[in-house]
Length: 113
Length: 111
Image (tube, rainbow over all chains, first blue to last red; front, side, top):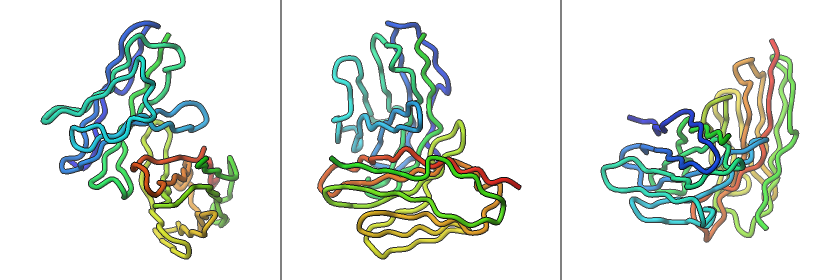
């Protein structure tokens, strides 16, 4: 289909628990991006993939965040030992070649309590 | 440091009252400037990409323009369904394809 599918829509985790978010990009799109949206529409770039290879990970907090895009599987973003400040909406986007406008998914709202 | 600033933060218009949203940017080299629309609880929806100063693009009541320092999103005779947050973002040349976003303009169009 022509949409980026993100699951789950909402996720609640206690502080210190693990959170795992999933993203199925549009078929045929080579690039996948993860962004974090916090208060006041602030979008923070986390990581991008070109097919299954990490393309740019300069936005990823090194210690607790990890991400993968494996062949024939949804991409995933995992947060180990969540903290209160990880509460945000996490958006995945995909793009055929990277330089044009992305298609975003509808996001996963993570609430850490 | 690469930066994108949008103004105003919020804008209220009457239906039919045309206006413009501003996006000013400071980057080492611009690969492209993007406009998105975001409705509450949804992901950003792509509107336009502009690549060089002087370029203009139109879609229904929206027209985007680009100079070397800023972009404008002109809304002509808006309708209530145009109410949304409009986001501006840039891609920097010689970097990855990540987007640097502004903080958006919340537009409310009253009937």
